Image 1: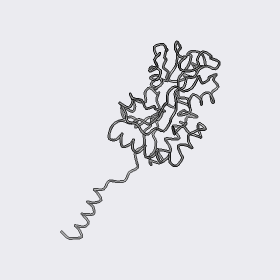
Image 2: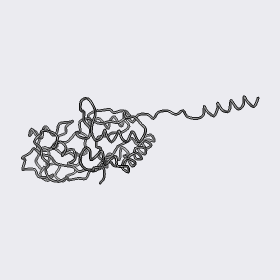
Image 3: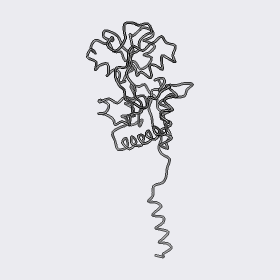
Image 4: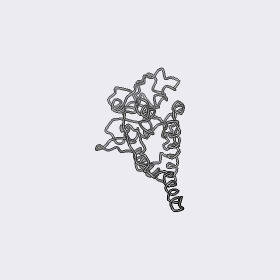
Amino acid sequence: MKPLLMNVLIAISLLSSQPLLAQEDPLRVGMSGQYFPFTFVEQDQLRGFEVDVMEALAQKMGREVDYQTANFSGLFGMLESGRIDTVANQITITEERQQAYIFSDPYVYDGAQVVVKKGNTEINGVEDLKGKTVAVNLGSNFEDLLQELPYADQIDIKTYDSNIERDTALGRVDAFVMDRVSASQIIKDKPLPLALAGPTFSQITNAYPFRDTDQGRALRDEVNQALAALREDGTLKAISERWFGTDITRP
């Protein structure tokens, strides 16, 4: 074989063995769009703290984001079936969830809060929920937190897909339990007669869940790297202060 022809064939072989550069696949993210101010719909657009953080993460990762919305109770089913890569909806790390998923580093630190109708003097904290009807979002960890209380059998827990604050304001339930940041924002921004009842009763650490697969672990590591960069350059703090007036991204 002539040297020139051999060199051409070798060059073609080397080129064909190298992977073609392609744009990264979009990050498929599930959220409810019903958890103000973290994720909500305004003028047909998804908005909120979760959206802003995810957009900043995607920019660091060089990816686009494909948002998929569903009721909170259905988000983990979407994750398990592979329809989405992760959930951005203030997912609290719990022992039960750690048995099913792997988690990113935490990006929100908060606490569980009891909320009542304004003027309710019977409930001044979690200890006063005995004998009361208490609303929680379906599939949230707040039901688990209430079930762990030593007097859980004395609490009538009702689960909702949405609007737990409305039914509390209307007196259909005695209280609801939610994270303190969201509860405070609801009281501030919605025209509902609600009030915080006592201090928080459990620390909450929120992160992104992923399937425990090779792909899930690789994506988790990629997200962690981007989170660290956003924390170091002050982006996470800035997003938090824009939405809440304080930094909820550090303990």
